[in-house]
Length: 392
Image (cartoon, rainbow, N blue to C red; front, side, top):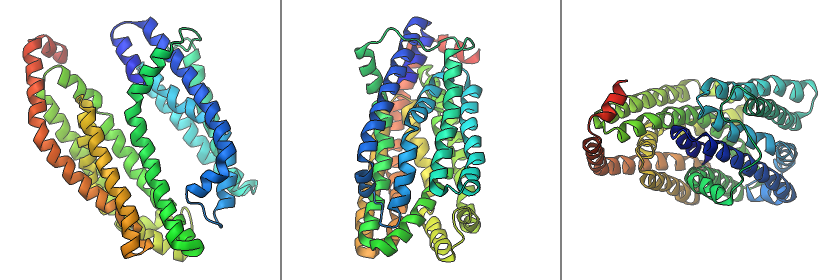
């Protein structure tokens, strides 16, 4: 919520206002990290049972979560403060912050897990230490002299904090619901599958969700990263550029998902081997990945439609479409195992991908003409001034 507000202040040449937003967001993240750490540490055992942990997985989950929670401050600071680096025009620095943590985690994982024989505790410790590295890099930059707007400790305003919370509420709801869906799926698997089958399917589901991340994270980067282009041209009254941008964005997203679709059909077992060599797990997980990814090509279109509406300043439609897809997934997670068996819970993703995309395309076709009409009206009001800016 703070980064877009800070971008607006910077566009207004209001450095004092931008500095105040950064200070308030730093305080909010600090308080939130401390509260989350204390509260969740006290409830971690109950939370794990609610999240679907079984008798077999509970000890591992508890060990991992206890250590991981100690790094909450570093995780929140890295993710949250990095946005204020990027919105000031230091995209490469923001990327370095992410890469530092990623590389550190990759290097430290085998050292702690296998070298020091810490197993799942080693994985958690490696994650926390890598987040610390990223956090120190981000905070050092934001407290340093290279960045125009640095972190300060004054100008705190509850009204401004509330404004930040309002702006950030929409993406918060979308991300939070993603976690609710995963938790719901885990609970259904554990309850209907029982200690034996449930733990097996849960293990496979964790690998499937990891595979989906290497699809949805780049996909989200492609579609959400173009929001500034769509928003600028909408404000400038250039519907032709908006349509052209959306065409290329959709094409790029579809190509990326098509490549991953082929990968899931031909090479998925090699991805699973990164997690386990148990043939029974490998066979089930490869099948689950192929089911889970049946609708990822249509999903590419749905991502662009939703992020496109957001970029053009129609977030209410974007949220509604995203919520509809998640509702489809939630209903399918509860109904499919009851009628078709718990192992078929993975088809819930297929239903939500095809159903959500169909509705999103229909809504897009119904509304895009009206939205482009508003864009043209804006062009008439602005005259030629915006076109001059675009050409420059």
